[in-house]
Amino acid sequence: MKPADYPGQPENLWNIFYDFTQTPRPSKKEDKIRKYLLDLAQKQSLETKTDDVGNIVIFVPGKNGRENDEPLLIQNHIDMVTDSLNTIQIDFENDPLKLKIENGWLKAEGTTLGADNGIGCAAALATIFDDTIVHPPLELLFTVDEETGLNGALGLDTSMLSAKKMLNLDTEEWGSLYIGCAGGIDYELTKDFNLSEESADLPSFKISVAGFLGGHSGLDIHEQRGNALKFLSEILSELSLENDFHLCELRGGRAHNIIPRDAFAVISAQNDVSEALKKAAEKISHEWQSFLPQNDQNFHFDIERLDQVQAGLSLADTQSCLQILLLFPHGAHAYDLNAKEIVSMSNNMARVLMVRGKFYIQSSLRFFDREEVKSLERKLKALGKCYDLHVVANSEYPSWKPSADNPVLDQVKACYRELYGKDPIVTAIHAGLECGILRDKIGPLDVVSFGPTIEGAHSPDERVEIASVEKFWDLFRNVLAKI
Image 1 (cartoon, one colour):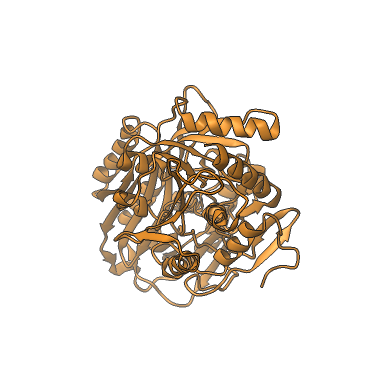
Image 2 (tube, helix red, strand yellow):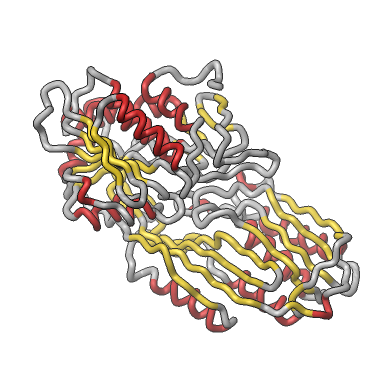
């Protein structure tokens, strides 16, 4: 049900976005939203094309004198990151989102909102219903499975498209035009440990850590937000300095592109280590409070003794696991030489599982220069060799290297200047847009990306600034008329 104060203008955009929030669309399970798009196009008698991976193109004829102009590609992805607070019960494959307005921002109640990239999708579809808008023939491309590795773009059948100019509407800082994005590659490190018989009958203890801000592993990595997995590994390593224990289980992280907000571990020991564990957690908490940003100070820990006994790793293998987690790189590793505020290379220690001896780490590397990131890859491979881990790289996608030699950029800048009397910020983003892949697959393609202000993407704090959406729509309309 729409909140009573749900935004009203631009009407078509907001109505379509509401439909998106009520239509489940997790990555890899976009059938419901794909049906919505195809039904919408059919009702408007518009031509559509689909490919084998599920991408959809809706063809919108030119309007108001531009019927015979060269086509323009408008690109967005239809899937969303599905994350929620631990206190929220939701089935993201079947349940609609609950919305609320707070101080000029639209957000969901305890879950991700999907403004990334639902607002862009809604803007593209809104062109269908606006008879006053002037635009050339549009190829509205809606890709699937962007959030788990840009797989829709990677599998795109480019024969569906003919445009040589493109607008991407998947960025999150109003007033900025993006002309470059990071590439990425995921790593998985695994090992099977033997369970230790000596740990089978020992008292077990569980430590849980939670309350970290988390966020987008590209857009927010420069803020040095806390990683719950790194925090937990430091606590356990501190405990191990004077206490022997067996690691029985460890879990944390939700997806490759989310900074982990919470994690837990189960350990067993000969003696009651609950007090020592508490002291270790308090010590590490005090240290982290001194350097984490002020908006990421609400983390906490909880310790409990378990009735159920769990088998764990040997003392030696426990130490190996802790050393791996301590040494594993995380965070921003390099900054652009020409724009110091832009991260050029980073790594997110995204997920860790250790269950019944099976050890797994998922890591997400981002980069502008494919050669530069090889040094970080060597560190992961060296870590794997030192600890006999199986190391696999997958889901690689190319960067979009910034270039100001771009006619589309010139046109969008001119429209922005005409509307707002000042120049936009022209920059690049340390996140994986599909632009790099599409330029790589389609060939020469002039591209600019812009969007409204979205904060907290990939986390339950996600929200979109309502006023910026109206400005975004005005710029989009003007660009369509003149490009």
